[in-house]
Length: 306
Image (cartoon, rainbow, N blue to C red):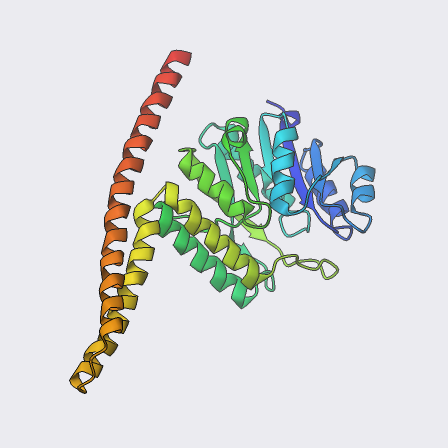
């Protein structure tokens, strides 16, 4: 295996201040096969990337997710390393990120930025949001990872060809991680260094808006992987609402006021909540059986190939 079998994928949007050094740094580490997927930058990002010897593709749509999907369809190399074009990733970490994939120990490697990050690389809100999202992911999928939103990743060809990606924005990292869990891919996390953003490079991430979208993606996609978690939250919310209205009804009753409509609403909320829990349990059983059947089919397929 040579580094020609490795494609360095750099999604970019208005990164003229950093894309040149990023490409040069990866080349200095021995990687000349560099693909820049550009989101119609308004500055000189594409010109600089081409001048540095990278292949450049202009994405046909909008959003980081769409760019990565388009790039995955284009790439034919056996191994892919995805990194940010804003200079926040260290190129020298590529060997650490790539090693488990090359050694056949992983299908998908994630660079954990939270182990070693430069002062100013994260705001307090970013750190809190990352931790909440990582915990939510663990609860929903039963796989506890430290940094599911990292942009520094490595894949083998099997992994990217198995992904069924639909998200177009910054939810793409969480969707890739979810797809890896759903497809039973081997995931490994390795420590990487995360640098503060260049002073001339403005962030495209809105912590609140994009954080909500990422959390929503994790929750919605859990419906087909962990129905008990998905329906359990709905059921718990309904029961909690019923208990709140029920408390109000009881307090009013002690004051001599009977709230019949509110009593009916309380009953309906609590019954609906318990029904959601039952539906979640039944769905979880169906999903577990389906997952077991799929594992058996994959095992039989692998045995046939051997």
